[in-house]
Length: 212
Image (cartoon, rainbow, N blue to C red):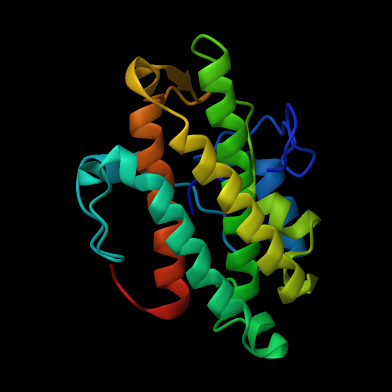
């Protein structure tokens, strides 16, 4: 849906594909379509910083920055509950073109990993340019639908805790540090935190149907 890595400088699970977070190239889209019926999401979701999301109900622009860490942990707990369900049911897509609950969970895990890396970049470097990431190609390459739900639950919780702790460490003027995407979107750490939290919240809504 929007953006979404491992630890260290640039996580291996999120390669520099040359594709922005808001779209994919024709070659990548064709390859993804050939391997998987999911239609790549090409929308720019930064609009959630300007108005509430009519689907999940989150008003990201109104989120208190200091609350994001707790919201990440609460969201991870929701995913842990989801992933405790029947493995076969978790792998089953509601429609061919819609991710299964397990695939959504894998995506959220990688969102947490990616945003931890990007947050570290913003705090350690002056206005870094983020490496591009193709979330749809990653889902295919990493075989999201074949991963073990119990393992994903642990990995998602660990990634969420690492990100939450990193946000808790931000204070004062560091909230104003900046970073940019290759499509021109520019964030402060504060707007980055608000933009981040919409993604896992929205995807939990996709799976549970429960609005915030």
